Length: 548
Image 1 (tube, rainbow, N blue to C red):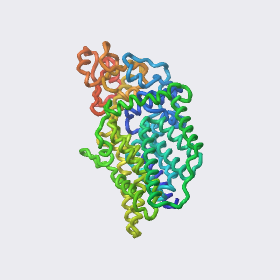
Image 2 (image 1 turned 45 degrees about the vertical axis):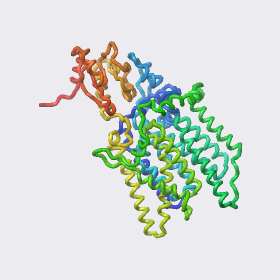
Image 3 (image 1 turned 180 degrees about the vertical axis):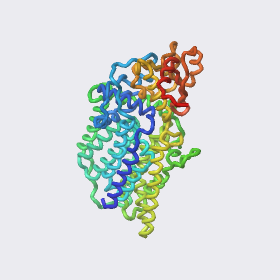
Image 4 (image 1 turned 45 degrees about the horizontal axis):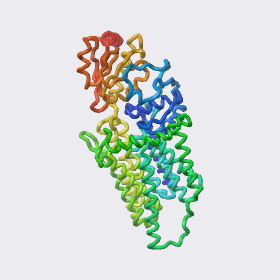
């Protein structure tokens, strides 16, 4: 790698860290992040993890989080009060009592997200395995694009599975490329392990695997066609050895077995990892609230402009990717990149984009899987565009123009991660928890501390809608009841009730409870806080007095 490409790579890594790691706790935990945190707490505190084929995806996020927690400066880790997160959603019809008296895990929102930051930055390092195929220049551009892409940055700051899935996908692709060049056994094993890690991360890995297989067959057909048109005299590559293929499959199978058995503590895990496709196929077919039209991803990635908002766009990457794809089939007079790799990436990206577009079930972070291919092709496209001009001044101007595009992406990445982190105008903030949730939690804690029982004060949460991330946010409380409808005995010293049910509760209060606040949990999900009148008086007495 020449010095300019190496400098660009170092700049990309530094920029990626700056964009991803700064003020990681500035946004309240999303529902999914809180569920993942609850399951991680059970694994950390009690050594318990069991794969659920109905919800929550695979185990790698939780197991790969453990080293980062071990390195954490926080020492306040106690026993988890719930054995399984899903029981809090489905079976919480009575007051729950904690299994122990120790404090709950105190790791912060920022600590939880460090693992996805690490994998987000790690993507850039994996590009080094592709540099002889992409070329030095395209590798450097792809690194800068990965570092600055708003989608990649925002979801690197998100404690969900997607960034790990993207990382393991690139690991499998890169190791597969290295094997195709060298036929060394170690790369076959690493490629197989990469696929195994993909399978243990998220069920949608099958879409990536399908795109890889289709792209491999397409490239093989292309090569045969070209061979028939213009036979090559160069020496053919050695065939894949059966031993290498068996080693790759074994490596993938071992990884799959280790993670889904929770390292040999859950014998049902492997079969559950297959059974899971029944409920997920139902969701993909429309049995889900996350059903969106085919253009959902393109709208958010290419041109998103709600009222009183900047224009959010990664169109620069998309256009450069088109140029890069073309370079794999025509032109490429200066051998910008390995044309076979470019054609593979083109078919892979188009196929994966089509699969995610056709499926009705859509959440914006799923776009990362095909957007990775777009970014790799954009790196090739940037290089092809610059080298298509022989004039040095023109080349310098194009490099500067693309550099401005990178800065524009980085600016957007900063804005979506900070100023608009929990804003409806952010194209990547989807069903995002409102900042009011933190105000609500702090208020409930302050009220509880005004009671002699402290965090043993009974609390009831009543909502027909999902009340996450509150089960995680209120984990310090020892006696919390979760209800989907008004129970016969609706009252506790602290009651949080959905605004959709408040009129029913009002009729039961007999003025012994007071409604003290109205809070937004998520977009269009509002909760009202009722407090026993005497407890409220105690709380008010603790507030600082202001002089008239």
